[in-house]
Image 1 (cartoon, protein in one colour):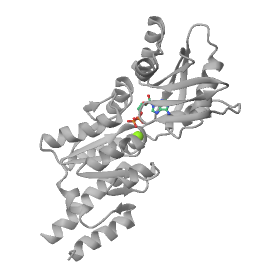
Image 2 (tube, rainbow, N blue to C red; image 1 turned 45 degrees about the vertical axis):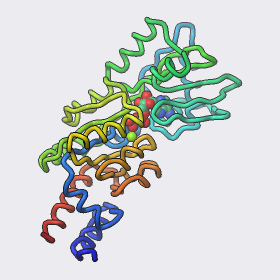
Image 3 (spheres, rainbow, N blue to C red; image 1 turned 90 degrees about the vertical axis):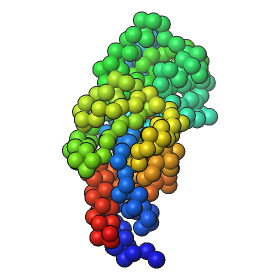
Image 4 (cartoon, rainbow, N blue to C red; image 1 turned 120 degrees about the vertical axis):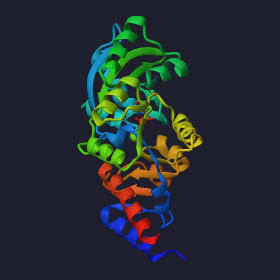
Length: 290
Ligand code: ADP
Ligand code: MG
């Protein structure tokens, strides 16, 4: 039988906006010593905005942006929404498909357009900038931006910088998680520059950047192999496998259905301070039983 205190604990959780899959989850929560955080949409707002554009030689910036917006109109990713919002003209895409954690592809005005991580365009599509263009795009990443490379019919069209904003409560929440004895780790598919900027803003010193969705799962397993009891906080399709593998999976409300389905706890508001509340609640509830 489930001790009454656990049921009271899960009930108290729902009042706080913490949806707990079952009473046994509180026991998992109490044992956690490491908390792995996805960047985009978890530590940051997930509302991104387009910054500088770096068209390839001979490409007009409007052509770069409109082409990118057309293919991204099929995607719900924060990067895609930013690019679509930056373009006013109506644009559309055919035979669209999305590659979680890498980018998107589709037919735009009869041409095959791809947009995503620069390394994905180079390796999967053999679409490479010249050395000068690559240095130009790399400077966007060094400035802390997410960089979307765009190609059309095998030709590099340029790069678009997209910037992310840290949620107002993230830094305070990470400090409190540390006070509770948890070690915070930032895990992201984004580039090193963007990851380092966010990590510095919120006070995380352990960062894994450029990680693929499969790599996120491996990162969780590697921490567990060290004997850590790992909580993972995420919101994306790309986080689902890692959320399921973690000792405790926490999904941000407003995140994707895949992330919520893979998790033990959903934090309705998406505020990291509520993650702190969830851990305190679990410790307090279990404390009343022992
Ligand atoms: P995160 O781990 O920060 O949530 P993702 O795993 O979703 O990031 O994505 C990793 C990287 O893949 C992004 O930083 C971006 O460069 C690229 N990417 C993912 N989805 C898209 C998309 N729809 N358009 C362009 N690039 C994308
Ligand atoms: Mg995310």
